[in-house]
Length: 385
Image 1 (cartoon, one colour):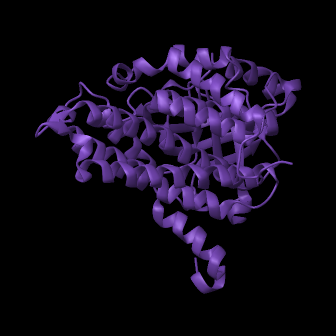
Image 2 (cartoon, helix red, strand yellow):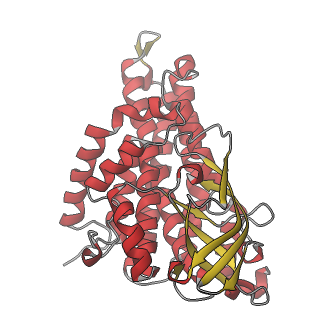
Image 3 (cartoon, rainbow, N blue to C red):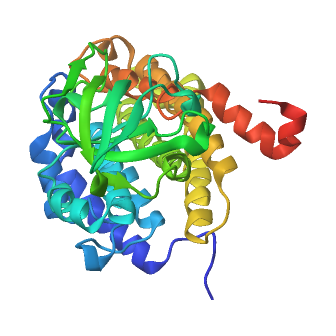
């Protein structure tokens, strides 16, 4: 009999395997990488070599054919070892999944092998200067021409766009159709009509974030993702996955900070004893351990619903608004418990705090997530738009 509150033996075996990979290859490199703006290309290729990038892709397309719970485990374990690599798992697997699921055979043959191998970098361009969470209000357009489409517009806050080889772009193909007029395209980032600009961010420096402008960019018909007007449905379905996976990036990072702090406070002595013997030290660790475990369970609950084919937008939104608070507060208190030694970039805690703070905004602000939850609980008419 299967216990729905526990992982299967296969999932646990995978966790041990990916934990060994994460700790042996990536655990000691986070701090050095966090200070650099060099994209972690070698790490991405190692993930490709290990088959991690293709976890959600069918075996027939060169992937592993695994379920979303397996991906969640990989994201958490890699994030515990190295927050930057945790994001690579998150971003690369979702991109491979979208291309495998929605691209034409021609586009799939061009882009999927490189993405699976970790040789190609992807970026997802949705947010615009005048439309963040209101994706249906986007101004980037795709106009019909012979053999394809012409893209014009600007996207902003796009992770890894300055390093990307291919960009998943959402554009309006029908101005009068609202959300139903949004279509997704695969765009060659090296096209001369595509120009990207980096941002100077305080965290996630190796990944990079920036804006990208499409100035008369031609996209062939076979580079449309899904059907015409299918873009908003695609991105909303993926939001339920990405918002949940962000919760497990944050779980892994927060757990790492707590593990570091537990080791430190049992070794550090003051007033003739281990500082872990003071409740002012041990109680915050107990409290944050509880919050992180609750976030972990809610995240896997959301993925479990996805695997079962059941709605999970509410759970994904809960994870997304609450997860950054849990991780940020845990890491902040871990800095305090380390004392003056943690106000330094010699330890990774300051970089971790900066990195997790990005998730307050990415994939939708807390206000948007709470609106999703309130609509589910109270009804759209009772809450409004």
